[in-house]
Amino acid sequence: MNTYKIILLLMGLSIMGCSDLEEEPVGLLSPDGFFSTVDDLQLAIDGSLTHAINEEIWGRKLSVSLMLRSDMVKLQSSQTYRVEMDMHNITGENEMVYDPWTRIWLGISAANTAIAGAESVSADDDIKNPVVAQAYFARAFYYFHLVRLFGDIPYFDRPAGEEADFSVGLTAEEEVYDNIIADLEFAKTWLPETVISRSVPSKAAASSYLALVYLTRAGTNDMAYFQLAFDEAKEVIDNSGTYVLGLDPDFQALFDANRIDASIEPIFALDYNANEAADNSYDQIAPMSGVRGDDNEEGWSVVAPTMAVYDSFEPGDYRRDVSFQTKATIGGVPVDYTEFTISGHEHAANVPYIAKYTRYPGEYAKGNKRATSHNYSMMRYAEVLLIAAEAGVEIGNPLALTYLNEVRGRARNGGQSTSGGYDEATFPSSTIPMDLSNITVADVLEERRIELAFEGKRWYDIKRRDLGNQVFSASGYEGAKPDFNPSVDYDTPIPQDEINRNPNLAGL
Image 1 (cartoon, rainbow, N blue to C red):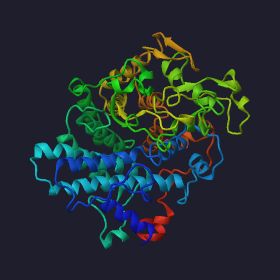
Image 2: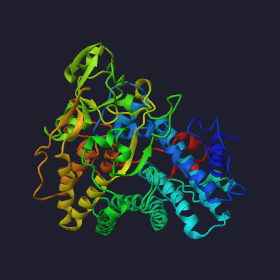
Image 3: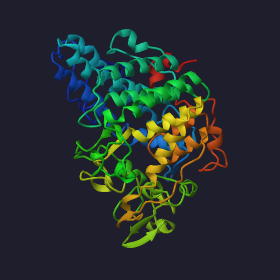
Image 4: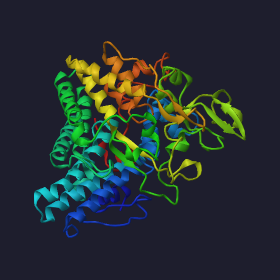
């Protein structure tokens, strides 16, 4: 049986562990016969969401490719597949395309298996549906990534495996979005208002993602979707007390594996805290973005911001101190970023590096800061405020300015971090950034760029706002990217191996 059929059968029949899924399945679950209790459904759902923390999605491949495709980091290495991502000449043979594609489909598979299996579970709706709603949320979460990455894609709302599934065609992007919205609406109806961990989907998570989906569908000019995005985000904000949500007083706490579990800001997170990886197979974002030769961080120096990116953060803004590493100890010598190349490694660069993931990786961090204890916020309260601000500007709602200034106000708090190296320091409150007195769409997009820097959001913002020609021009933070073509490069090519096996995936 060829690989394409194996993947489709896995989509229909299996839930896999976090290691090499195709080689070492830890369980094969059929919707017929396996599911008899709500606990059985929960097992399948947990398996679905576990795929997201695999190295092929947020552990490295997808998270880093989203950084490279944005205008916020520069590639320091020369691997062809990474160069393609950085310069926007991506081919269907690229492993940073194929690996996330395959892993996301496995996550969708497990969600579909749980949804189908729920039909065999005899339980009252008020007991069963809050659990099944997690599967609907997981499916929407994965499809939302796929459709933003690839555009038109195959769509399965059931376990695959029938012969016709091996020649399935593409589903139009707009129809995929309609299905995502339907899943999130079901999830919002049945998910609980509060959860024991932000890695468990909640009503607020479903509502927040609905707001972001509406904002994405609005593009640059659809007022109806902007209104929907604003209303949905405002609902989360207005019910923040019920949902136990708010801005964390200390921005650094959001990127401190030792403090984030106590934070009320994450709404939905990928939690590495509970997953100790003996083989270092999980989270690798910290070494990918760390300083090469650093005695403490032991980074690989694969991605790093340009000086223009660092300089774009206002001096005195605490978020700059949290987001960037400006000092290191290399070979026993304390240096600032102007001397990072003292390591002598070809990948090293004399620029401030990303500090969000290297500074406080938690107790499970192993060699090179792999297998960290980080909780990666896929959605946090600050982003909901900024969704409401952006949509509010578009529809002329004066609350937009209030919401934007709430985010800026938190940045003025200061907090407990380091001075750019390793000495703990208290950063006092400041007057920077100041509140804005009026607001434009550009102001909100800039605030998103600063607030959510290096969190996998910027590329999606560039795409939905059609900013490519602007940000990848000679005046962009990384300089000109001459290969970027907005008519083709907003959509990732579907893996060529998949098209070879099923030409119906080639589209027009």
